[in-house]
Image (tube, rainbow, N blue to C red; front, side):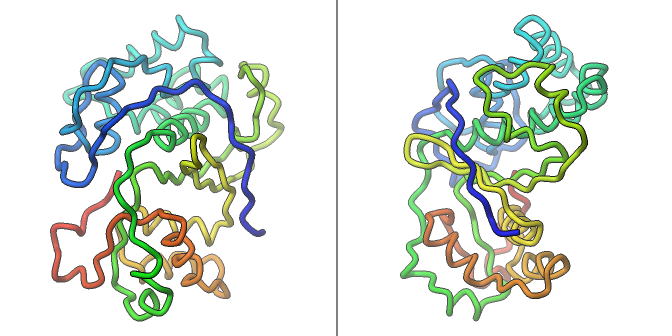
Amino acid sequence: MASRKMASRTRVLPVFQNIQFRDCTHRNVVGPTTDAVLAAVLGDHCAPAAAPMEASSLFYGVAQVLGEVEFRKAWSEFQKPTGRKANPLDFADFLMTQERGRALPALADLARFDLAYALAAQPGPMPSVAACCLPEATIRAHPNMILRFQPNWRYVALAWPVHRLLADTLTADLLRTFSAAETAYLRITPNGMGVSVTELTGAEFALQSVLRDGRKLSDAVAAAHAIDPALDPFPLVAGLVEAGAIMDVVLHPADAPSLQQTVP
């Protein structure tokens, strides 16, 4: 199955201005406001202070399904001290352990999609590597290269295709309309003033998400070929460069060990 671009969803989303991602090293630092939540997800505790925003703006669909009161209760339970402060990337897994999530199996995937969508909507990316600086021939010649993606390029795998629910108002009844689970692999990216949601094949998702995680090109190619041995990955990677997805490239990672780390 070829990649399929979905229509953008219209959402009222918080906008965090002037966030700089390149040099921050503070990870997993979460406060009571969603500017702190966003900073924790992106590893950017060094960001200038933003106006406090409600967590329901990040988990927009979940807040609609649960309602304001129940969502605040769920978020409060998630944020309770457990020896370390909760990472918002774990909110979906938390919902799966609750009666709310057990009653609505698609709710956790809705949380995953909500967060990825909200992060993709944020402005302020770093300058991208130009296609002329990283042509396909160079990509083919450097199997150990590491690519650093723009922070607002997000990848998420769903067991329930909640992104196809394009209703203005999400409800619990709407989530129950799924008759069975159906895996969907998504790339969620900024698109002008909006957000684009693209369905990928399993092999395309493996290639791009492994690269997005900060691993070597050879690892990403191996992951893709384990699913589809016939896939030619190099034009896809060149397409990512051309689309502005890449903000840094390390052709020889052995010379830059500090960049060999997993990206949130």
